[in-house]
Image (tube, rainbow, N blue to C red; front, side):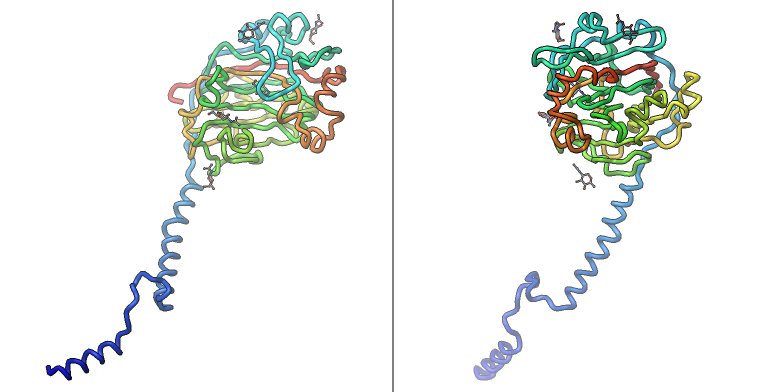
Length: 364
Ligand SMILES: *[C@@H]1O[C@H](CO)[C@@H](O)[C@H](O)[C@H]1NC(C)=O
Ligand SMILES: *[C@@H]1O[C@H](CO)[C@@H](O)[C@H](O)[C@H]1NC(C)=O
Ligand SMILES: *[C@@H]1O[C@H](CO)[C@@H](O)[C@H](O)[C@H]1NC(C)=O
Ligand SMILES: *[C@@H]1O[C@H](CO)[C@@H](O)[C@H](O)[C@H]1NC(C)=O
Ligand SMILES: *[C@@H]1O[C@H](CO)[C@@H](O)[C@H](O)[C@H]1NC(C)=O
């Protein structure tokens, strides 16, 4: 090649290939490449991501039948001997003065006969600003797993009340490491139905397949989400308040096992025969009211060592908060003012408990 030919060739080469852009620069991609890339993303999404989501939404634990037998029965005149009494005030800022065992006996706030146990709020005039006398009791026995049958004849309700029957380990500094299972909880008139809720540390997500008749209110059980709202489910309106009481109460049953935590509410006239006969078998009860499966929540690392806790709180962060107290339930005055000045309003604010029975099963 002569020098001239070489220059010519060089010139030709330069003009035919402009400085080429790097292949990864999307500004230089042609439409064909875009089509191929978009197709690829589409295929990836439909073949991998969507099925993963579908698998997650269809995954469900096996709640196989367990053989339960009676471990503890809380009933009759000895009912309160099986509990300790909480005293003083509480962390949820209520207008509440939890009395000691002696105080409760003296003012007849806890009272047991052969067929029922009463837990009530004092319905007499009070003085001072310490709050209205009421009761909080904690079972001496602790539980991990079990089938808990709460046979309730009457629930407390009315403006300013925040009653609950729940399972938790509230020892100093432990909560919520060992979790909390709220079995029956409501505020004020409670006429929208009882709420069933779990509270945990991080790692319990209920955005999974569930089999329940109740209405899901929130999915994340982590205590710090949404002011400790927990993952909550609400039962039908007949599961709490005046409606429940006029129907003679009913049974709330909680099954707590590795596969998950399920909760049923049965009105008095729909209690399954196997409960009445003392041989409860959840595998025959049909769809639960609230279902908290273990799919995205390791039940055994989040829940342990619980006591049964019964309390009637007054006002506080939920019941007494202005939008809930005044707007949602149309209650009068300010909560603490009403609770302090209207003793007769608390005559109906009592639990009447027929019995609490705890059954356990091997390999649960
Ligand atoms: C109140 O409870 C605390 C903690 O359990 C206990 O130390 C204290 O003695 C109780 N007070 C009364 C008056 O019983
Ligand atoms: C205590 O309460 C029970 C249950 O409501 C009632 O039957 C009993 O008469 C009361 N006892 C006293 C001393 O007031
Ligand atoms: C019952 O006691 C607990 C612990 O002191 C408190 O956080 C709660 O507000 C009380 N009432 C209810 C309904 O849980
Ligand atoms: C729970 O799962 C849902 C669905 O996968 C997700 O959108 C949500 O962010 C999760 N919440 C937490 C706290 O992990
Ligand atoms: C949640 O629990 C942590 C301890 O794990 C505690 O420090 C925090 O105050 C709790 N938050 C609420 C809103 O209860």
